[in-house]
Each structure stands twice: as C-alpha cells, then as structure tokens.
Amino acid sequence: MTNKTKVFDPNDKIIQRVIYDKPEVVVKILRDSGVSVSNRPTLNEITEKTFVEAYDKQNIEFAKKFDSLIKTGEYNNAVGIVIGIASSIFSGIMGSRQAKKQMQLQMRIAVAQLENDKLISEEELRVYGETERTKILANSLLQYRTALQGESTMRQKNVYVYLVAIGLSISIIYGTNLLLADS
Image 1: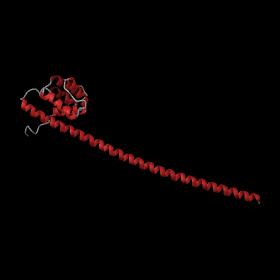
Image 2: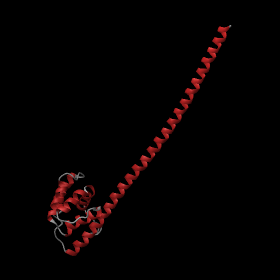
Image 3: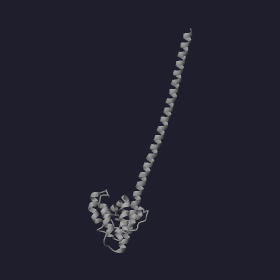
Image 4: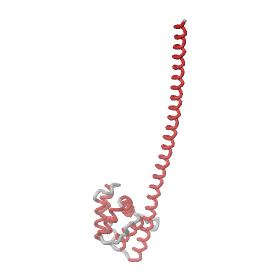
C-alpha cells in the first residue's frame, strides 16, 4: 500500500461524520471562530472550511471547539473510539511543509466531499424507498376502499331486494287475508 491509497484516515472520517450529522453546529463553531460562512451553506462549503481551518490554517480555537463537539456526546456514533481518538485528532495536524499540506488538504476535502455525496445518495435512496412504499400503501388503501364500497353497494342492493320481497310477501298475505275475509 502506498501513501496515496491511504487518503481518508479515520480522523477525517470522524470529522466528516460530525459535519454530516450536525452541520448547523459546525457552522456555528465556524462562525464563532471568526470564519465567514454563507447564509445558506452547503455540506461541501462546510466541509471545505472545516478542513481548511483544521489543517491549513491550524486554527487552534476552532480545533478546540470542534474537538469539544466530538467529546460532548452530540456525536453518538462510536463514542468509545471517539473519546480515545478525539484528543489526538487535532494534535497530529500541526507540522509539515506548506506545499505538502496544501496538496493533502485538497485531497482530504475532495474525499470528504465524496463522502458527503455518498451519504446524500444513501439518504436519497432511503427517501425514494419510503416514497415507493408509501405509494404502494396508498394504492393498496385505495383498492381496499374501492372493494369495500363495492361490497357496501352490493349489500345495499341486497337489502333493497329483501325489503321488496318482504313488502311483496306482506302485500300478498294482506291481499289474501282480505279476499278470504270477504268470502
């Protein structure tokens, strides 16, 4: 395995998962750390600014706040691992040459954005599946309602037939009774 194949390390994956799960909190941390974020930020913008602050600018204030976000429990996946790794997430960030850091930063941002796209695609698939499930349930409900209305109409027709038959029977009995009473 060369160094190029190991682009997305576990710390970056944790950072990206926090960005995906709590983008509004990350935006607040960025703004509180003095980073300019648009009024309608996208996941890609948040990811890029987070990685730039952490890796390129090495913003210690931002790193401490972001590290605190991971440690506070708002990030609920792999808490045991996060507690062990969280303190070292930003400690390994400091150092290295500027050109190499810039290249690694761009690679990390690109891979993080691919991770964003993957998570969004998974969400779209889940929503599509739920939409299709809802359509099937709605069609089943419509079919059930139609069958129920048809059955109700048949029962209503049967009641009319029974009432007419009972009425005719009563009139025949009454008519017979009148004819027999006149005789």
